Image 1 (cartoon, rainbow, N blue to C red):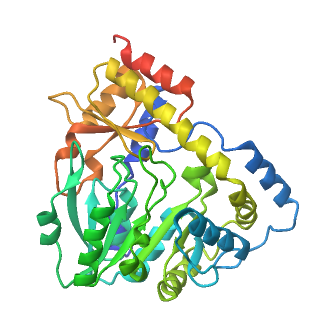
Image 2: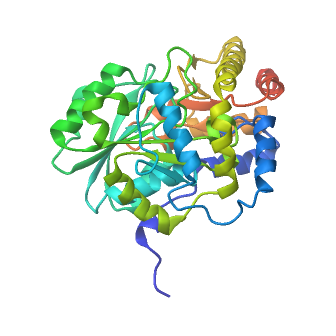
Length: 381
């Protein structure tokens, strides 16, 4: 029989699937995958139940329900003083990951170069690979996860088409500074490349409020902003995301989206359109609640002599691996001996070996879950 697509054959099983399968087999507490072990707000669930009875169960418009696009436009205006036209500059996607894939397929031709910060979310590399683009990694160096500007500039060429930035950054929890964004923006102008800004953790910062990349007015027309409701409302299974960009960029991204997915879930789009105007109080509680979860896990790990790196955003924190072990070996050891699953950072790197000495904990869990995990980690085997 004829062979499958060569680029697809190169893709490997996600480390999240590998670790989760082993955790389930061993009966380990899963602090590996980035999703809550609790449901989102009950009042949003009630809205969804109501909407399911309102005959909104057929295909939605491919660009997304207009009421939702209007509410997202108002959210950006109210929160950041950032204006996107709902008719032409906002596209609703099947989660942020589909928005990322559709954006990359819309922009990247074979041989185009894409700069990515490592450690990186695995779908970035897979999407670029399937588009036959060329990945150019720039390392965020532990422990503060800053990047070397000379290293970044060395990756630029006349083939540079796109920079992918994740801010707040998964898996490090780093928040890029305004000055860094401005510096990157000047290079985007000088070398004429686009910026895909993945901002799904925008409401999970613990020191300062999030600043979207597109706020830099000189580069707004070359920034593709992607976010979603999965992390913010703790409904990761709803898979509702959006892409904000210029009409020309949205048109190209929609050209891909319509043949990948056509549209996102119709009744949940209507639900979210009704929920967004009511989220002011929720978002304050949301950030406060996650800060408590972060501090609970961080304090507990420190008491157990883990060397922890405090995150400024997201719901992840990193810890160093004991000498003599790789991150994957250590994760397997924690699962088998402590019955706690974490994620090794080595698969998040393309170039550097720094990931061999780091593991990621997810604290999007109930306090009972975190306390039980800490109890397991503290027991003798």
